[in-house]
Amino acid sequence: MLYKNAKKINNNGQDILLETKSDRRILPNVPDKTKVRSNLDRRGKKTDTGSQETIYEYIENLQKGLRYKVEYNILVTYRRDGRKVSFICSGIDISMSGILLKITEKYHIDGMKEAKKIHLKFDILPGTMPEGLEMKVNMYAEIARIKMVSDQEYLCGMAFIQPLSVYASKRKGRFMLTLSSLLLICITVFIILMRAESIIYFKFNKWLYFYSLITAGFLLSRYVFGFLYREVPIDVDYTPGVTILIPCFNEEEWIQRTITSCMNQDYPVDKLEVIVIDDCSADKSVERIDEICQKLYEAGEQYDVKNRLKYMVQEVNRGKREALARGALEAKHDLIVFVDSDSFLDPFAIRNLVQPFKDPKMGGVSGRTDVANTYTNDLTKMQSVRYYIAFRIMKAAEAYFDTVTCLSGPLACYRKEIILKNRELWLNQKFLGQKATFGDDRAMTNFVLKDYRTSYQDSAICSTVVPNKYKVFLKQQMRWKRSWLRESLIAGKFMWRKEPFAALSFYMGLVVPIAAPVVVLYNLLYVPLTQGIFPKTFLIGLLLMSLLMSVAQMFFRKSKTWIFGLLFCFYYEAVLLWQMPIAWVTFWKSTWGTRLTPSDILEQQRKRGQGSNDKRSEHSIE
Image 1 (cartoon, rainbow, N blue to C red):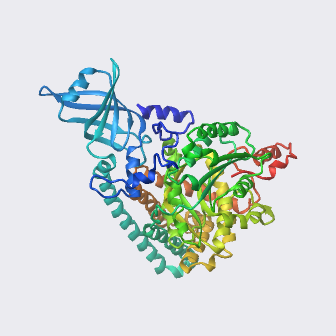
Image 2: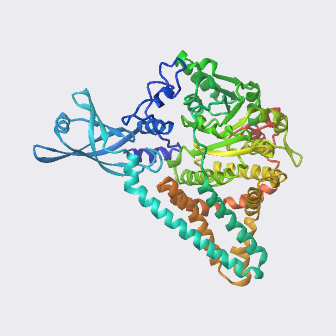
Image 3: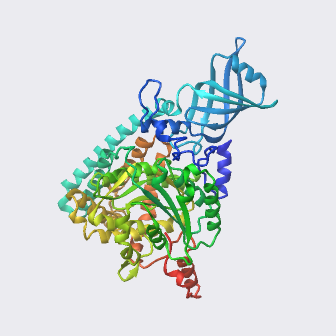
């Protein structure tokens, strides 16, 4: 069983990712500029009802056809000569619309051909299909095709009587939607009632209850505006020129997959180019980049890959900002997309990402980042919930007012003129006299936010590989907190000029996490020790806020991972929260922490008393 294999892989420290069945074409989603095969033509085809197929129907049908490699045990049941026959066979790949079975006995093949009904029973295991589809399946199916591989092996394609997405909605989706809706209402009411207590007793501890009211008001407003958020719909005729920049440093494992996903976009060939900038990697990244470029160059002249894909290598390691800035100078299109070297784009990511730029005042747009290795272990599951809520709720709430405060590095789009205008300031940014070497996405967002709008497009999806070890994760979180604190203080100088409610939300969001460690210590240590009062109200409040996050995940994703939202919140209060005070006094740190950049090597040598004169250590890559 795949589940057992997955656990074995996990024990070896490797990541578990969805494995799709390869298309015979290396770039199946790219429109053919010769019009021999055109996705746009497909979208205009007549359906069975005689109507035109819309872009959304086209995307839905394409997703239904995606096949995932699996190793399932399938219980097949049919009737032959008036008696019920059951046997177990292997399922080797599956899609929303059907499954491919490997059957070793011709007897069953003949019986299935004659049977009026064929019943399949199997489990969709976590991590083998998109999140939210893990479930038990009991469904009738029909034979679509049969292929004889040998006398002892037959491949039988079975078509489900209804798509798995519809089946999941009927079996568990409606239940989880109803349950999560009721829970969200109850949790919200309880939080409001508890904050009413803060108003009643406000005079006894003004600062504490004031903080309590601010925290509840801020978080509840995020969920309200997150639910009200609506993305910009696709206009198939709006296709501005786009250049994708991929900075790379020591990413030999994932860089080929990243480049292929960026090239395999449903977007006009003459409007999209990809530039890879390797920042003097010490591993085989450059070799892997050249390898995939040569392979893609052979895809066919109709895709014009040679004129749309190129790479360059920095002579010395200068950092991620330098790599992106160099790529921006080479870009030939008006919109520039930053993509991390371990992020994989959905085929419609770029088409969705550019839509908000129809507004001339829109300066930057963030896409949604999902976790690619969700089912590796409990840590990655916690991060999966956290990522989804951070984008679908927090960024969506900011987008409601066109003031997204961080256009996240895995997938973000900017107007080229803004990048070039602020290029030197971005490269030479200093804070409290120290050179800023990470937090490049937040820093660039601040340059954009000063004079332009920023937004979030939920349908522009990429997936990224997150840390699967706590040591690496904690270093990443520390780096993020340093850059968040630095850039938030900078943004605070101009955010007051934005829409009043957006500005108020920003400053509330700045105060809440900074003061949180003090408030937690006061409630969990000072009050019990000095007054002998158990902090029941405080703990209930934490539990309700944690449930709000988890249940929102259940509402949107219909996934069993929702419980890990609770675990993440507890882990945050116990561990991550206490990184904030450290971040206050370590602004000068330039080490990455999650990989051996020159700055990390220099830091290791410094601790060992060896020192280094390598100028490449002046910058790290994020």
